[in-house]
Length: 153
Image (cartoon, rainbow, N blue to C red; front, side):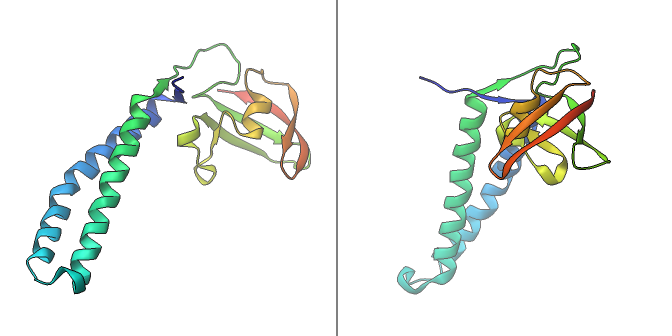
């Protein structure tokens, strides 16, 4: 069974951009490896070992990102007033007077520091497909709490 990774068009583009950046950097890393190899004895050549490791990490990251694109399911947003992938929500947590704004994204795009939460996180699951004005209970590892959807953009 093939498992497709849901993501926004922006998330897909970010992966494409990272792949392009890594591919552009690959020739430079290959030259560093070749220069280190020319230094001689490979068994005691720290520069060669580090260059080989760095190039291996780059190649591994390229393979990983390539698979992310291959199995990506790009989800387009619908203007139906419900919380969904790609939409921004304004939330009010029951224990706080302030509101917080989050963009609902795929698992690979999630970055809480950047205000992006995954649709399948405990918070994401609690609010998905719900409309503004709805209060939901979030089942989090640290315990449950309530959150009210103030606005869906």
